[in-house]
Length: 222
Image (tube, rainbow, N blue to C red; front, side):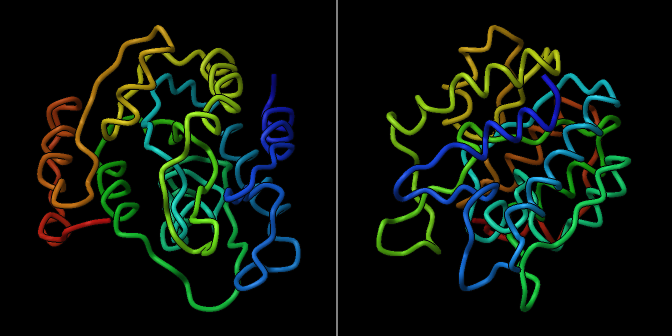
C-alpha cells in the first residue's frame, strides 16, 4: 500500500447524499480541477505521515462542509492549510476552491492543539467523506451504518499500512468505532457544542502540555 493507491481507492466510492472530495465536484465553490487537487493534498499528507513514522491517529467523525469537504483533509479547513504545510513536511496542501477562504471553528481548536503536541498525529475520520442532507449539500449529517460499512476495509488498511498503535478518539462516535482496530484507545471530548474546555483538558492530560489559546477556549465550537 502507498498513498497513491490508498487515495485511488477512496476516489472510487460513490454514495447518494455523500460528497466524495476526491472525485466529486461542487459546482458552487470548487475550482475546475478541485477533486484532483484534493487527491494530491491527501497523497502528499499521507506520504509525510509515512516518512515521519507517526503512530497515532486523531480520529473525528466525518468531513464537514466548511472543512474537509473543501480541503480533502480531515479536521482541517482552508485557513489552516499553511499550518499543515509547516507541521507536516512535504505535505504542501493547496486550496481547491474559489471565493473567500472558509474557516471551521472545530478545525481552529484542533490546530491550536496540534501546535502544542510534540509529534503531530495523523488526522482522520471514522467516515472519510462528507455526508449531507439529500436536498442540501452544504449541511452536515451523521453517516448511516450502511455507509460506514463501505469504508471499514479502507480504514483498516490505513491502520495496518501506517502501523498505527494508538487512536485518540475525538468524540463518542470515534470512541465506539475505534475499538475495532485492536490498538490502544484514548478518548477526549469533541470540541463542539460546549466541549472546548473538556477537549483541551483531554489533550493536556494525554500529552502533558499546556494549551494557551484562551480566545479559542471561550468559543462554542461546531
